[in-house]
Every structure is written in structure tokens, then in C-alpha cells.
Amino acid sequence: MKHVLTLGVALCCTLALLCHADEPHITVTIDTKKPGPIIHRNIYGQFMEHLGRGIYEGIWVGEKSRIPNKNGYRKDVLKALKELQVPLLRWPGGCFADEYHWQDGIGPRNQRKKTVNTTWGGVIDDNAFGTHEFLELAEMLEAEVYINGNLGTGTPREMAAWLEYMTSDSDSSLAMLRRANGRDKPWKIHYFAIGNESWGCGGNMTPQYYSDLYKHYATFLKTPSDNRPILIASGGTEAETIWTETLVKNIKPSWSLRMDAISHHYYTLPTGNWEKHGAALNFSEHEWFSTLWQSLRIEKFIEDNIAVLDEHDPDKTIGLYIDEWGTWYDTMEGDNPGFLFQQNTLRDAVVAAVNLNVFHKYAERIHMSNIAQMVNVLQAMILTDKEKMLLTPTYHTFKMYIPFQDAKTLAYNITGSPDYTSNDKRIPGLSASAAESKDGKIWLSLVNPFPSKPLKLKVKANEPIKTAQGSILTAKHMDTHNTFDKPENIQPEAFSAKADKGELVLTLPAKSIVVVELK
Ligand code: AHR
Image (cartoon, rainbow, N blue to C red; front, side, top):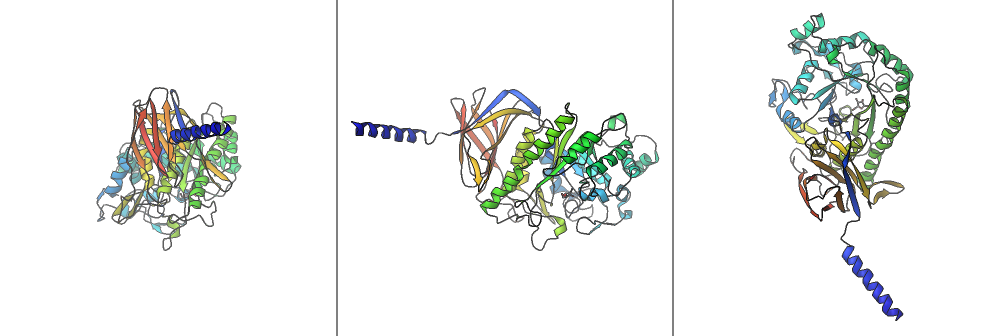
């Protein structure tokens, strides 16, 4: 009798296992009834610096170039950027900003000063790309602008004059000079930063010294009242909170002083070691994992800096801008190390997606982020080689995420998801974000970081779901990438899933990013 019972129990268990083996254990439940903060479209901002081939060749080739161009801007890159719906451009640096003197880059191009780019490669900059060229590019892309002022080697007078040149509608000499240089109406300047990385290349300052200088410079930045840029103070990096803390304590807003946001920078190095970053291609699974682990440390840095802001700025008037982020690999042999050119693989696409999901989560304070950098530098959207151009996997992630720009975040809950572990480190085995776009559609992004494990999951919402439609980015190898000979090696494909009794059941292939509209 005992044997019969045991056999019976064993049979039942086996049947149960067989019946349920295919059922997903991971469940994502979305609450569509409680929309949260708006995901500011400027989280999708881009950074462009006078660095390597980021601007010269990458965007600007000049009217006489044999590379097809519109008024000097290369046509293929313009088209790709328009399709990406870039909401914001940050320029002219970076470290370069603290050595940039704006008057070198205005007036007839053949008469502009030739300067040495001492930060990046020691090359000559003929200043063909200056204020007018940048602001015209932004107008063509219908993007907002973020100008980074020179605190390190400039003066309050030089900085104030630049803003006056761009924004004054008066008959001042600077406004007349702008007109003489071909621009009648002032430009709208949305954001203006006072210095960059002032703890390092921007002057090796202490937070206290910088915050005093910030007050000095900011006091004299005067613009017409309807054209006041959001003023950004240069903040810290990585785990630091001392910059945020010193700035928020030392700079008290008054009628003559504003500080609307603090910047924070964090770069992802696979090794976490600035001496040897790790390779862009041909990396091991160990380095795939460590890259994601390093990248996701950003969440704690954001939380800690937000906690400082919440304590001193409970009304949440000050934004935290991650205005430089992305992967930074070792330069490839033969490349100029000062040019920071690197290949971009499926791993970069996944890094971008999980970071964007984190920024969405903290959208209440993070109103801007700028991936470094837009073309040919670090984790770029676009790579060029003379007349050739390719779109990187990171470009594809950004394009797939367009519906999240200005969407309302939606709360969601994940249960049953395994952690992805390596040695003593772990990251979540599923990254997600849910939002309601301006046209009332519900969007879900899902990222499977496991390089060889598909994930089966169920998606539920308050209302029954019928289908999901969107796109997927995945590939066979961790370092699959596009080349100038095979520019479409990796690109998004259509993805759809059907629901069963109002719940979506889907499989996320290993190392994939899926963005779908739930219907
Ligand atoms: O993006 C490259 C450089 O990284 C920037 O110029 C600087 O701000 C940062 O250190």
C-alpha cells in the first residue's frame, strides 16, 4: 500500500511538472491606473564635443566636401539623427568646454582662429564649427540646446558676453555682431552650464571653491526674461555626494542667483579600472557581466545624490542631470588614444537600455541625461569612416525607446525573476520599464541580460491585454556589431506576442531588448 501511494505521489508530481514546466514563473504586473512622473524627453539627450571625429567628419564636413552635405553638415548623419528624434544637444564639451573661447568660432570661417585642442589629441581646431553652426544644427534637428560655459579658463565677462551674443534682441554691439554674422533673431538657449567636471579637467577645484565661483559667474549671466536658460552647476562623479551636498548647501537662490540643476557623471568601464578599461570587442561572458554590473552601480549613485537633494531641497526644485554617461573601452590599436573612438556591440545596446530604465525610475529628479557621445566618440549612436556611415546597436536602443519620451511612468512589479550572478556579484535578471505615452498608449520595455538564457514571462495589467506589438534587438553573439561593410548586421526586428485570458505570455530571447505597445 505504501508503495502504491509513493508511486501515485511520484506520478502526480511528474505530471504536474510536465504540465507546469512551460509555465512562466516570472510575472510583470503593470498598474495602469497610477501614472507617476513624466519621463522628460531630455533623458534622451545627446552630447557632442570637439573631440576626435565627433564633430569634424562625424557631423560637419564643410560645404566643399565630397561627402554629400547640406550647408556643411553631412546628409546621412542628419537624416539618421532626425529619425532618432534627438530632443537635446549638449556642446562644446566636456573637458573641451573649459578651454573653449566662443569668439574663436564666429565670423567668416576662413578668418577664424586656429587653436590647439590640448585636451583631445593636440590637433588643430580651425573653429569651422562654432556657435552658429551648433545652433543651426539644433534647429535642423528641432532639438533643444545645452551650452556648456567656460569657467576653467574663461572669465565672468566672457561667459556673460556669450549669452548676450546668443540671446539679446537689443541693439547692443554683441547683438549687432551676431546679426552681422548672419543671424538676425536671438536663439532660444534652453540650458547653460557653468563649467564641467570642475573636480578634474575643469580646474581641479574643491566643491567649496567651485560653488563660490559658481555664484560669482551665475550672478552676471543676464538674458531677456523670456529667454532664461536653466542654469546647471557642475557636480560630482561616481559615488560622490559631496559635490551635490556642498552645492545645495552653499548656493541659496535669490533674485540675483539661480541654480536649477546639478550635473553628475558616470562612465561604465568593464573592469572598473581607468588603467585598463576592457575591450570593446571579443570579450568574455565574465566581462559582459562585469560591464552590466558596473553600469548598474549608477542606480545607487543616483539614489544617494537624490537623498541629499531631498534633504536640502524638499520641494524638488533642483534637477539631477546625468549629463555624461555610457561605456568607455580601451582604444583600439592604431587609433589616436585622444580620439576615444570605439566599436559598439549588442552589449552597448543592453547597457543603454538598462540605464534608460533606471533613469525612467528616477524621472522625478532626473530630467536630463546625455549619453557620451553622439557620433564617433565613446558609446556613439553613429560611426563614420570618411563617406561611410553606420548606425550602432545603441542607436537602435534609443530609437526603440522613442515612445518613452515625455511618457508618464507606470508602476510595475516583477515577481519570480532570477538574479544574474557571477562570483559574489548579482544584477537583476530582468530589467523593465512601463509608461503611458502622450497619445494614451501603454509601452513596456523588457531587457534580458543573460547571454544564453531565454526568459519566459507573463505580463498582466489592470485591464486584460490582448496583444503586444513592437520590436526586438538581439543577436547571436555578445559582441555582434555593425561594420562599414555590413552596416545592418544587427538591427531591430518586429516582435509581437499574444495574450491568453488577458495575460501576455512571452519568451524573451537571451541577451535581448524588447519594446512593445500593449493593446
Ligand atoms: O566624454 C569624454 C570626457 O569625459 C568629457 O570631455 C569629460 O567631461 C569626461 O571626463
